[in-house]
Image (cartoon, rainbow, N blue to C red; front, side, top):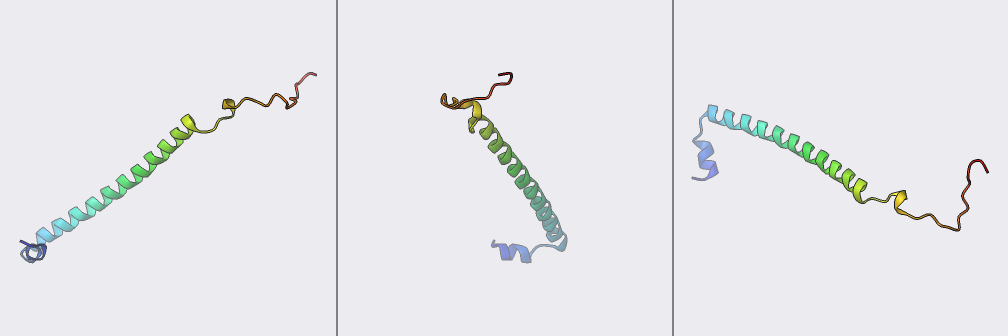
Length: 71
């Protein structure tokens, strides 16, 4: 049976139930999309923390004169 034939043979309460189910699924899908975006943001932050550029990874240039307090 094709979708059009199925829809034509459905009762109004069945259609209402399907529409309600569709609305709930859309809301759940939106929440999952938000959660996915947040988790992707967190992963990007953790990657930056693990693999990103950090000043302590670089050796200072020995030719640069540093100022020392107390001298």
